[in-house]
Length: 104
Image (spheres, rainbow, N blue to C red):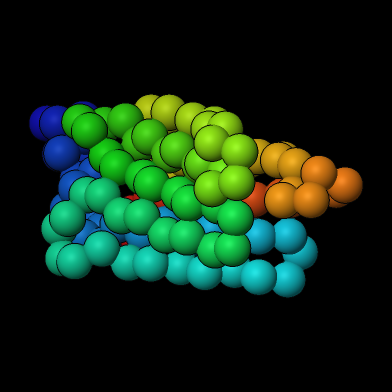
């Protein structure tokens, strides 16, 4: 009985899904979805991030708006993180983005 209750408490413990996109070392943007909505998206400068929960898996995808590159991470937890390095618009440096999505 304890096992059944603990497995079913995943959705009951937290009702807000969020995504936080960190751009470089200084810029961080967080978006919180509406109550009990299990997907969110956030953007900052040259990155867009989307996250969603399907069943017990959290999937996060980050996309470079300049190059079209994407990176995806799927975790069997309530939170997932993905990281991307991408050339900047001038091609002489790199942009760094980290996106974390999950329940809070």
